[in-house]
Image: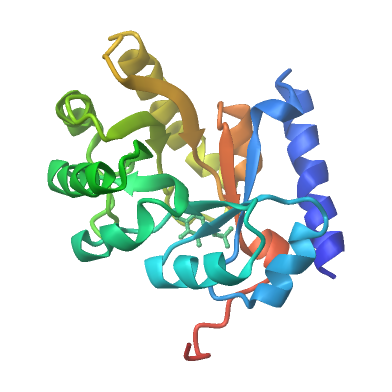
Length: 232
Ligand SMILES: *Cc1c(COP(=O)(O)O)cnc(C)c1O
């Protein structure tokens, strides 16, 4: 079942790339494995998937311990200050930086580990009350401030688009994030690149790819519905 899901997602990514003249290699599929047992992750790993996304620090580090070491772990969920120390040397990319205070904490931990932490800035493009992320208008000033921190390298932007039934409704959201990333790229800020655009989930990743996503985060489409009633 997982193999079939995975191949369907892969096929749809290829078709979306074809439709807009992009190479498949320009888009990284992140398998979002939150709430799923490691046996399921291993099945996808065996199909050659190496990028996995988790939204909780504890779950990521737990799976990190037992899964093969060549997996690239993406932290895609909100990050609390007090959890930063557990994650800086385990995640290949933190997608959810949305405040200078959080960035400063990451910078401090990076210093302790003698590493540079690659991050994305989470932008709440649709300005939904319930979502984390900075407003579009706050993004550039935040990035300028973060660019001065030696332990952090900003690699691009991430957004969680609204929940919609028709993915076309989110096209303007993805366009807006792409535009913002081009504007910021043109500022040529030291220590900042805009090479990553993390946008698109199960419901709308094809539209996101058409609008320039370089990373799509697909959970349900690969692993099936999540059951939050199972206590972990
Ligand atoms: C859960 C989650 C996803 C995956 O959502 P699906 O709709 O299951 O594909 C993507 N991004 C983030 C930030 C998530 O928390």
